[in-house]
Length: 325
Ligand code: SF4
Image (cartoon, rainbow, N blue to C red; front, side, top):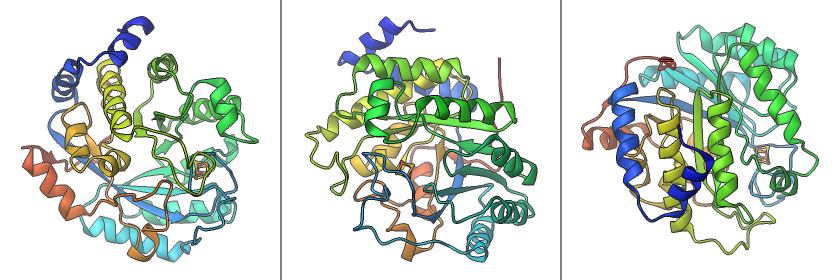
């Protein structure tokens, strides 16, 4: 277990030997198989205004879409046909879909014998419970930053305490719970990234998604003077440290990493990651889910080729966390 000071030292140095250590731990604890999670981005409407996100409702330049329940279920069936064992339903915080509608969608998809992950934002305990009872297995809710001041600045009308309570509720309901952070935000310090990593350990997250910050031109952070290469390198290091601290969890090689570096996912897979989330949303919509610009959407065949190119295999399992301690 690293102390906060040790984490800060590693993140601040040019030494990247921890990437190799993370890769060895990944191999030892979760093996060479990579879990593919089929991502359906079913609505890009959002009633929040997070400063870094292209889906914020104040971005009037975004062409909005919503998939109907039938379209969502059809996309999941396609994912099943393609051999995917997990379907991820992701959207902005969109109140259009009632709890009843979402539960019906979950129940239908569950009949396909796949694991279901939800990534639909902050909800009440009872809503989370209803989705769980309908068959949802996992939930992703990134904290984005544990720095309270920064969180407040970037998330108007939101509260970090409520976000923490949501994570607590998800865990208490028995979801495999995922969180994560953005790396390289303006005003974000190395100290706060160290706190983020220790927070992942403290809540014993089952999945962690790390995203390098990429400024979106139609957001308040659009003109941020950011060194994207530095953000990429730092996000890989944050991810590797997370693997070292949480040895048996699932960690995706994120699309944002691939967007910043043409080899980004391979580097991530060789630095602790063991999951990829190919996008199975229909072509017309997936380009409109632009949280950040130039998002690289993953196509399954390319993803599989990439996995084989580094002598890894595609998992045949649903890929739940196999807790070792
Ligand atoms: S980060 Fe999530 S909640 Fe915030 S604006 Fe984007 S989609 Fe909405």
